[in-house]
Image 1 (tube, rainbow, N blue to C red):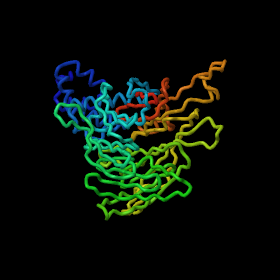
Image 2: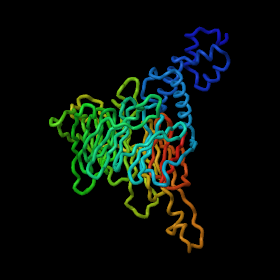
Image 3: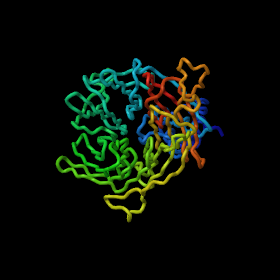
Image 4: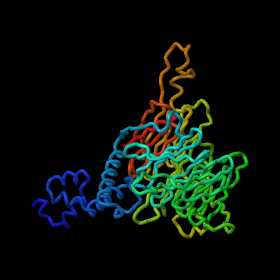
Length: 474
């Protein structure tokens, strides 16, 4: 019996157990299988069994929410990405462009939503500028540079369905304001641009954005959660650390019934507050806190959503990536540590005010890196599926204390380069008990200043001191 003689229901069952390459090969055998393999239900089944259930990075949207062509493209790309991460090593495909005329890139971000087409860079000449780039062809789309303004902070919206794309803090000589920007076309068939859709006069800087919620923080202890649509807010008050003159907020995470505020060397957990308009907003205090001592960086990752849990967080642990700071000035190493913050599963242990997570977090594993040196780019990103990227400094011990550009030096100095490290921590993409470094990509250009990582697309973007942008695709 040949496949072409099977009824549609039986054929659908056969296709549901085939791999993506098998489906692509089979559709080339006859017209009926070509047409049948182009149906929505076929790629929904493949996406569910071979992508979502296998823990491969994919969109938070339901599979039924995509057109059949878009769904097939996303499933095929995700299958390739999963195979790459499960292999002993991965190879990056590099591309790049000049984003400025020699000035450094201050910040770089992928924009969720908008079919994940956009990338933004932040640079500064006389005044600050945000430039929007098309990821498909690496061309400039538009720029936004308010007259006589300097940007002090920027937060990108993690929600794909919200009209607001980012929030920017603008400093002018007579005012400080946070503006909420959307990416839209005001004229039909014209390129999109940045449009201000809301604004708030505040000295606090935007740290994180999730849908209509914007987290703003100062450098001491106060964090504001503001709904820019309803104008309601709540105040999160962290304990003041007397020995710190500046306790910068680096990340705010919207977790399950909890908001985590990450500052210079501590993490504070607040029960999800009820927002209210002024002057009825309340001050909330953390139900738990933890410190990692002096560190070079902390990044908290929220787990991916699942069909059983539409919030994507209930009953799942949070992962915390920490780059340690060594007190020994002669040490040639530093550590990348993964910590786990487990949820409290018993309803008898929680109230409306928490706790919802067990503090302190526990260390799961660590990577000892063989180099220690100065970094312009201290950014590191841990994806929801357990893959991470960070920059490893050039090895100063190779070159010694004398720079290669000293004219009187007779002996050649060995060259060392900073590298981008990509690693998979234990999980569905890494079945080993230890983290696996999958790639180390050397930087032969000017030092990097910033990075961002799109785990779903398997793409890293890096900005440099010379204004160049490097795109690395898996």
